[in-house]
Image (cartoon, rainbow, N blue to C red; front, side, top):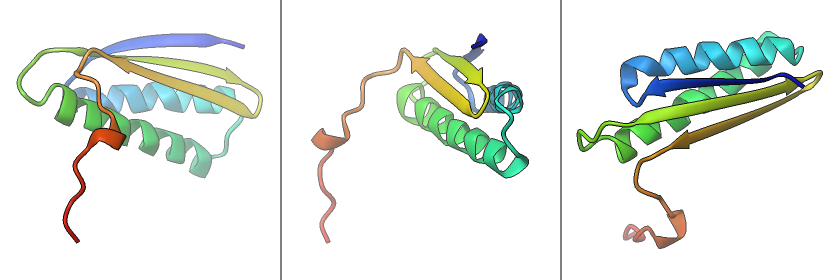
Length: 95
C-alpha cells in the first residue's frame, strides 16, 4: 500500500493542493470520479475547519496530509497544530 505525505501551509489558498493530492490517491485506489470527488470534498471541508478554527486567529500553522491507497481502499489522515476541538464540550445553542 503506497503511503504519500504532503505538508501545506494552513491557509485557505492552499486547500486545493490537498484536494489534488487526495485525488491522486483516489485514482490509485481505483475510485470512480464521484467517489473521488466525495473524498476531495471531505478533505476540503476538514481543511477549511482547520484553517478557520485552528489558524483563523492569524496563528501560522501547517496541515499534514497522509494518503494510503490500495485497490478499493483509501485512508486519509489530516494533522495540524491548531488548538484541540472537542465537540462534546461545545456549548449548546438555544432552540
